Image 1: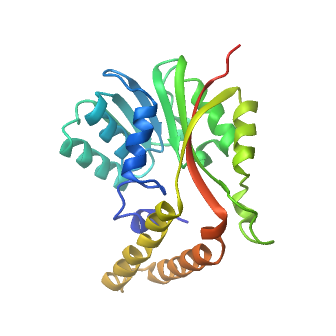
Image 2: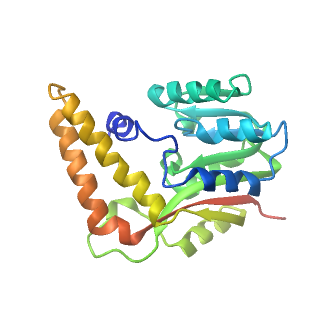
Length: 243
């Protein structure tokens, strides 16, 4: 979908993935973050990961995203949590952001591996800014069960085991994971329907109103027909494989 439709649909979301605040906190605990830990979050969305972890653990970070709408929300959230001096948000192409070599303890890309043309490519571009003993966090959908023929072919996904194989081929070791569940998916996907419906009713003269209506109908139908029973999603914790 277009970036604008994405911004409309997720206007009411703080976490822009099928992931709960509780699981985001668990992920932070798994990463053993200490005060002063530096993190680069690529395609950071509204910056909830960086701001909440900075507030809880004293992390310092940089988030990069193409959407000024999401970044405005990210800066507001950082100010709300009192960490505006500790996290920086940069507008731009996350796949092209040059952070320098070996400068971050954690490099993350949660649910946006399109920035590197897929999981393998994104893992490749995440390696350069990572310290030798650092952690990579990557969020990715996968097939929890094989979809019916003709469905989801454009997504080019693999199974959970297939994700593990891609990680190994990229030179990383999978050391932990936190997976979303069905309720996480429902809260992420279904809550967008009301947001979009409200927007449509409030903006009847918008020049893209028919496209937004079509997007809502397609998204709702796809989720109910095949995404809900067949799509999984999770965040995978990696580190460079031992020599």
